[in-house]
Structures are given as structure tokens and as C-alpha cells.
Length: 292
Image (cartoon, rainbow, N blue to C red; front, side, top):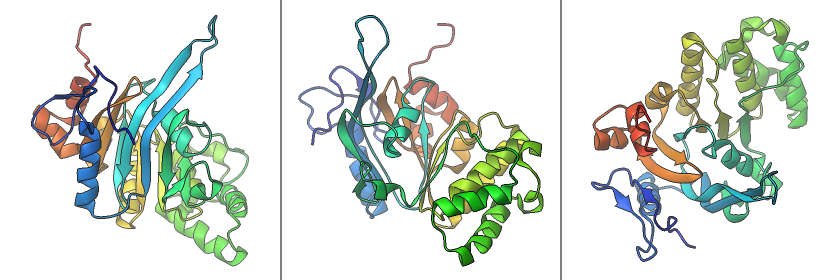
């Protein structure tokens, strides 16, 4: 397995004292070394593992040029961890999630969930997923929607009622369970999306921009839900542009830029390295310079 970063491209190994630039002769790449170190510190088998992942696709331009969406991405997420997957628009975050969910095939490399290749359908039976944009039959009530998803997951009939009760309380929608979803606010609709992602009692939650478009109260409620899930031992892998929220809830983060992994490690280590908050550190890592 080749862990090298693309020659000539620089990467940060969070927790190291220096900026590291990979080269063809450098052996194991610094970010891969950090992943190995983190794995040994956690002392457990990763629940999600991505190995040297490459995703390419042909553009619709004349000549159908090949565009690299993901370039040799490697990372691990451990059980019980809240992991933030960060990057500007177009960095490759959603593409990576689509590979994990089986929506998009990898060009090269591999991804594993619960130690099963994501190409196998069984790898997704213990996953809850919330896309950035949710589309539901809005004439349904929250309870009706959850009963529909419970049938999809073949949850035993006797267990459906208690499970719906549990997830509606978790997302604080138990008092609005009988109202049509079309009457819900944006924040409430996002929370019913979280409820459907939780109906099968998943061990791993993959959330694509769960706080997108929410007001401060809505973001706070989603953050509280993620913290409750962590207290229950669930693993949460989510992307977000709300770096203040990420700073509060994440154990570790990965920063992706133009399809390449630029930083990986603990939030506190990243902040300490750059002597600033996560938002400012993020801008430094992706090379953003104000005024340009």
C-alpha cells in the first residue's frame, strides 16, 4: 500500500512540530504516520478506514478531460469518535461520502466500514445517513415518515413504536410528531432528517452539512444532538462549514483541499500549532490569503 502524498504537494501532520513536504523518496507519508499514531493512541480497530482513495471522472467539456475529485486520500475514524471532515466548496467532501455510501465507485484505492469493503452492501446496514439536502413527502407527519423508514430497515413491528419514541425525544420532536412536515421550520426539518438517520440505531452516522442553513438556535440543537449521540457511544463523521460548531464537538478533524488531505489530527493540536482558533487555522492550511 502506497501512503505517499502526491510529489511536490505539501501537507501538515497535525501534532508534529514542523511543516512537512512529501517527496517520492520520503517513504510513508506524514499524514499516514499520524493516522497510525492516532490508531495506536485510540487502541482500537477503526470503524471507518480510507486507503489511498482516488476518484476521477470525465468532464462534459470537449475532449472529456479527466478531473481528479479525490487524490490519494487516507484516513481512519475510530469508534465513539466525532470526526469533522472539513474543506471549502469543491474540496471533495461529498464525493468521499458518496464513495462510503456506495453511490460513487472509487477509481483506485479502497474504503472500509466495520472492516467491510464499502462495495459490499452489508457495510451500510449499520449506518445512518443525512444528506445536505433532504427531500421528504411533506404531507407526512414525522411519525409516519419514521414508520416508513422502519419498514425499509425491517425493524420488527413490536420494536417500531418504542424506537420512534426514542429518536423523536432525542431530536426534541416528540411534541410535534403528529404535525405534517410541511409545517416544520428549517431547523425542525433538519432534526426530522436526523431522526430518520437514527431509526435503525446505527453505530456510524454520516452527516453531510447537518447545520446548513440553520439559525444559531438550530445549530445549537444539532450540536447538542451530536453530543448526546457521542455520550451513547455512537461514531459521527460529518462535514461542515460551521467551524465554530466543529471546534466545540469534534475530537479530530481532517482538512481537504482540491481533493487532497492537507491536515489531520486533534482540534487542539491544530490550534496550538497555528496559535489561533480553528477557523483561522483552516484558512492557513488551505493557503487562503485575504485580499487575493
